[in-house]
Image 1 (cartoon, rainbow, N blue to C red):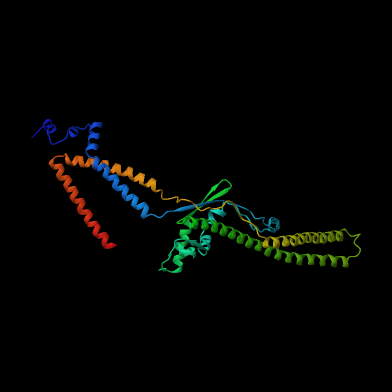
Image 2 (cartoon, rainbow, N blue to C red):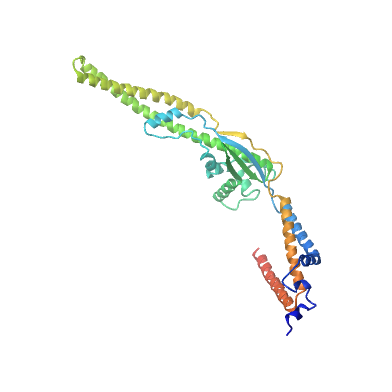
Length: 358
């Protein structure tokens, strides 16, 4: 049986496989010998990547806007009156902490957006957003409820909003530059409309409360006035009776308090009616959305460069494996042949099965 020194002198093995130490010169020698593989591998990967990014990926455009909340001059005095009677009605509290993050990405606003129509180069003019985002030019194969649910999820997925100080950065993504700009503009309009309707509904609730309380106060005031009148008619001379004087003061005080409440409610009712029909701006647009000049993703140049580096790495690995297989002993060559055979068999079994499934 040959000893270790005889194995090291075997002429079939290159000198850089003689021991466990590999020098830089050995590595360079392998790279030069397998230069063809190292060049062809990244070339093939880059070519496939270029074909993929240019013919099989869709560009994504983004349009941004800066917005902030406006309170819209609510009926604060009317709310104070309601609070005096133990009822807290939050009118016109357009606080950005809950309004924008929740409402802009809510299903309610997304459902309203699906009813709007947009112009696109791909689907034509004045097409509903539901059609654009779901079935396009094809006939729908599912029910309207399924389409609406899918459309809502896609609308929410197109929206991104981030807080930056006192304002918000709203970013919309889509497949066309003009479409994404119009989408962002319509979303801001829908948000303002939603806020206006919400505050109008709350103002109407306040008005209804004040009207009901006004009727109740008017009835109480009339009853108190009648009681004071009856007391005065029955007791013409009360100068010498402290108890009657105290009773008269109590009745007069009750009339005075109810008169003040009735007057305040009457004033606030008129104020609330004015606020109910008053048009206010609830969304202030600092920077309106604009049509992007270039798609934001995919970054084709970056993807191709990364694919090139990956291809070079794979090529180097393949080169070392090929060099080792070519310069190994018979046992190693048989093992590599078996590995290659098993890989070919595995791939041949997978490809037909995938074809049948398709």
